[in-house]
Amino acid sequence: MGDLNKARDCLRKTFGFADFRSGQDDVISAVLKGSDVLAVMPTGGGKSLCYQLPALMREGLTVVVSPLIALMRNQVAQLQAYGIAAGALNSSNSREETASLIDAIANRRLRLLYVSPERLALGDTKAMLQRAGVSLLAIDEAHCVSQWGHDFRPDYLNLGEVAAALTGVQILALTATADTATRADILSRLFVREPAVFVHGFDRPNLRLAMRAKSDARRQLTEFIADHTGESGIVYCSARRQTEDLAAFLSGKGIPALAYHAGMDSAARSQTQDRFLQEDGLVMVATVAFGMGIDKPDVRFVAHANLPKSIEAYYQEIGRAGRDGLAASTLTLYGLDDMRLRRQQIEDSEAPDEQKRVERRRLDALVALCEAPRCRRQTLLAYFGESAEPCGNCDLCIEGVELVDGTILAQKALSAIARTGERFGTEHLIALLRGQQTDRITQLSHHDLPTFGVGSDIGASAWRAIFRQLYAGGVINLDVAGYGSWTITAHGRDVLRGKAAVELRKEALVERGQKSPSRSGSAAGGNAVALSASDTSLLEALKAIRRTLATDKQVPAYVIFPDKTLLDMVHLKPQTRDQMAMVHGVGAAKLDQYGDAFLAVVAEHLARVR
Image (cartoon, rainbow, N blue to C red; front, side, top):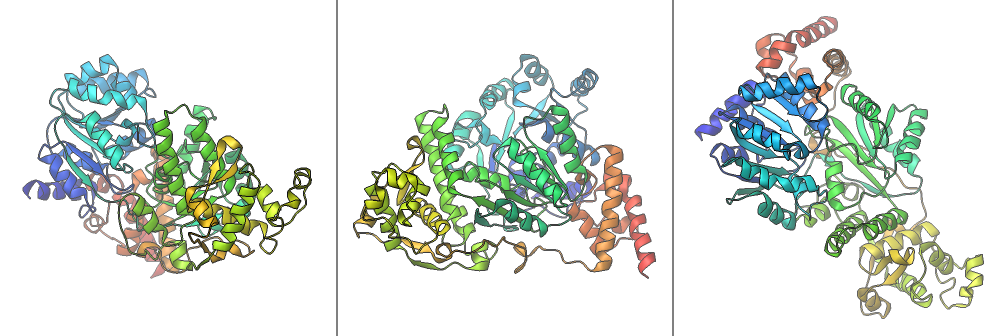
């Protein structure tokens, strides 16, 4: 306990945190004892502190392998704001910056060095680090080392060799998304000696989970974002053009929105990213090229305009909301076209058959989550091997869901698929079921089939929902090679013969507008913050001085102080430096740099309201 008590003291003095988050103490204790460690912790669970704090408590250099330059840059800025000697070695450095950094490493003035896996593989980098007294190699986003990881990166395969070159170096591997197969692969590729393994759960109770079938995607997204006026958020799109069109649409609705995708030139991407980090209330409409390198703690919502590529990708992307532990909301829109596109991407990839099989399983799990008949959090956590009670903080828990016997409807759909030779997609089958004599129906004489018109009492959008649920329930399968045609599974044939029953969500069977989820009802995770008009005014004034300081120093706003710190200032209203030191996130270095500026804002506010 001695080391942990010293760690808590360092945590308070340097970072301004009163205690560890759940799971951090176990990992930090093992690292301080010298063990190699693999830690699986939820996004926003404080993984970075698990190597930053030990780096301050002992001799030697801690090398942090990070996949993105943006993440390195922001974490280094944050550490320097805490008064910690940190640097990043990457391709964005000028020649002078690199020379200065190499000198600091050679003279052992640096505590933490961030480096990309590509740079680490270079012979001169390895040679330099061999002379630098590296004590800990921390590997962030460690799932990238595994062929089973959802974001496998070949450059990560060199890390085992790098670790061997740094003879006897301690290894800490960290990730938020690693199932059993991925963890086993990480263990075999990175570790020579058996590590301590910590799996600290996947639940993010502060995130409200919601999913909606697409009806009018732009309207649905606009209504969702309207519940978060003045707050920062991310909207993910599947195509570059879509990000630009949607950002323009939202801007036209008075919502400050920016587009971000990999097709933009690097200067424009960097400028857009910096604006999102430094300003409050911006909505970033982006492809998945944006996000992994963003450590912004006060993102209050994440929306998906299209279905993510897998359940792991979904988990990681929604995990960018609410990293400060406060309430945040998520919304995912999905449709059959999304499901077909994602399946097509898997089939068209050059991945080996075994990898494609894994990717199909991950996509099927996400589709099942979209059409889940019970608490979404239970369904999501069950995929990661965890059990949970109904959460009360997802759309299904809040709005409720009623199941009905859908066997006859399923048999009608299956009959339409079977009688047309399992060669047609959703819209043709719906036209057949609803008795619509389209040109294609007439051309193929499908109006003469017994199934023609047997579902005329059900609307087209309801039939689409039925097909999605049958897919999620393993009754039918989407044949990508057959251009989106539906085929019947073995389970589906049992349903068609009356040997198995099907339950469907009743709400999907009625024609009505889709209501976007809002933050009404129970507070998300119990962390929603309700402020008086006076306190709201103080919070805005604190954000204004933070924005000014961030702009002057050209750092993200949260590097000055995150929202959680500002909210604690609003609650405590410190009037002295000693009182300011008690605010969450105000360590000694930040107190010296910024304490007086924020105290002045609080004093001015108190004088005005008295």
